[in-house]
Length: 239
Image 1 (tube, helix red, strand yellow):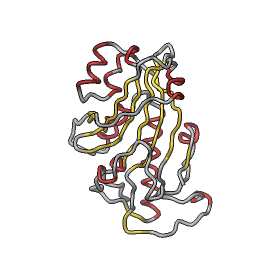
Image 2 (cartoon, helix red, strand yellow; image 1 turned 30 degrees about the vertical axis):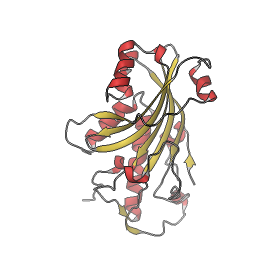
Image 3 (cartoon, helix red, strand yellow; image 1 turned 120 degrees about the horizontal axis):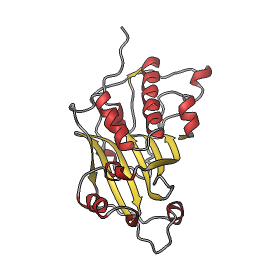
Image 4 (cartoon, one colour; image 1 turned 90 degrees about the vertical axis):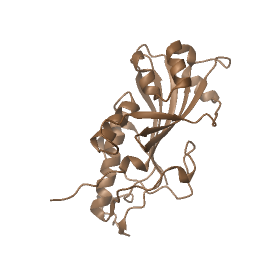
């Protein structure tokens, strides 16, 4: 079961959920072998489960309250020392994947059936760590020629390329794909089945958003799927 929650719920409460079934894969996800196991193991006891959920929700709150997911991941990677100091997010483009925009996406982007829309599939990486995978549909006529060239020929993340537009982010949906705790854990549901370490699935958060100019013109729709690698740091310890 996948729990859906809004921005307000993410900000004000710890939304409980159950784990995504092993066979369930988000639409934008890559094959299972693409996301390696974590270097750091999270304890499977009650404390470890609460701590890992708190970490997931801390990242999600940051993502939902900032306009650039790229900059949020820059900060997350640095703060948690997921890779070498000074590592910045880069986008590994996958040109083998193409996805035509749907009628609903054209409506969201406010373009006609004839307006060109480009598609860009990337994995956002901090050093050697893939933190998220993103599907991006954007309107090239609403970007500068230099921006379009950078998106076509470089590994610069989309958010960094379009930063001069001073864009705003409008969240369309936010989903916590996995939780280490059962529904109702915060009001009496027992936390059972403790294990030495947590079995964290490959994909843990999925967000969908529009990027718009300061005047409200949309130019991109993005679906971001965050991997378990966002938890690849040493869990907190009690002293």
